Amino acid sequence: KYSDVGYNLACILTFPAHQRKGYGRFLIAFSYELSKKEEKVGSPEKPISDMGQKAYLPYWTSTVVDFLLNQSDESELSIMDISKRTSIMSEDIVFALNRLGILKFINGTYFIDAEREQLMEVAMAHPVKEPRVDSSRLHWTPFITDVKRDKFSIHTKKASIQQEYALKETNKKSSGGAGYHRG
Image (cartoon, one colour):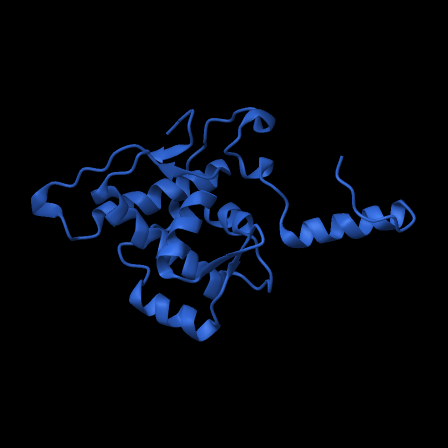
């Protein structure tokens, strides 16, 4: 499971007699559940093959859309917020949402441009499939590293939009209203 470059799964092989039964997707989901236990974000081995992309893209799509519809109560989320909660690397989230055509890039910032009804249509087209990983039954103790030096730890990721705003307001108050300045 340990990778210096943030890969949470290096290779998947499903023998032909067992293909199209969801085992590859199960292994992908399992690798991300292990990443959640480690409190890290992960990604498949790069460069990703055409077959790898065909396996991962539906997982990323269904997981992110399911998260947006069912697991998030916040009205504003950053890509990093989604990444921290799903353990999917932000680049992979951006790739999946771009492929769906619902991600806009305006003035250096990504925005998810989709109403709830559109997300529900996408969820129906890209459902979370069986077999699923039951994370409550996953009992595993990850290898602990120095969190401050681990660039894949969710604790080293940039603050969310709301955290940034709260920090700005705190800095304004403590500096006499001079505004937010990051040094």
